[in-house]
Length: 165
Image 1: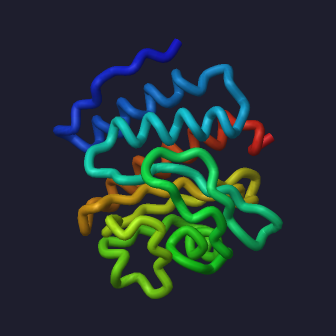
Image 2: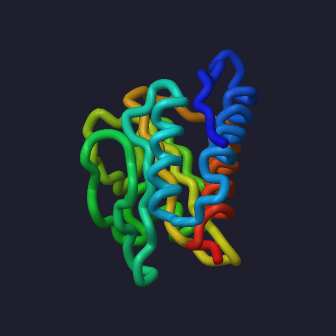
């Protein structure tokens, strides 16, 4: 059963271990991908400091990403594969960590307050389902430890959802 607990942000490693425990409990027994994406986005948005957006984009027809459940300001609805940070993560099939989005060629500014971004592809059975996207109003907000932690959250989400079945 899920029980929200305050996450101690003193150690990133412990923060992500605690969020992973909470996410596993939150998604336990639920396999609807939209419900699980909504709860995953809400948990990350409220558990991690200095975010202004946390959410999902789902791949449609292998050509574009379409916004899914998120927390934060309204977002771009469609992003072509290969465009922006999200589209680049899909094209290259890997996580993309951007310290300053103003220096990322082709960055799509859905929220002009965003300064840094971390995008993790959702992969199941070698197929890209979409991305998990985090934005921050602070430059250099994300590092390799955040990337590893969010990659773990993406894996928990994919394993719990019917998208991976």
